[in-house]
Length: 95
Image 1 (tube, rainbow, N blue to C red):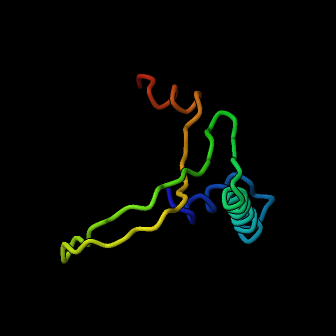
Image 2 (spheres, rainbow, N blue to C red):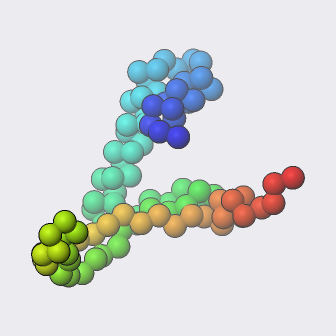
């Protein structure tokens, strides 16, 4: 599912909200997650999972086109850990 499909699904399931309103809600939701993570925080959605960041050390990478070694600086990357309910649902047998 892509962002526009999510917005359309939410709008279809909530006919009292207009498409622009649903789009603003989705934008705000994602914006808040990004702001929390950029401040070093954590976002936990019970039953779904938790978003955090992980530190990556500086290293020497390789340009795949030329084979030349290039420095890669240290950085933080987003990380998602699925919740117990999600893992159970994904691994349950479909009947």
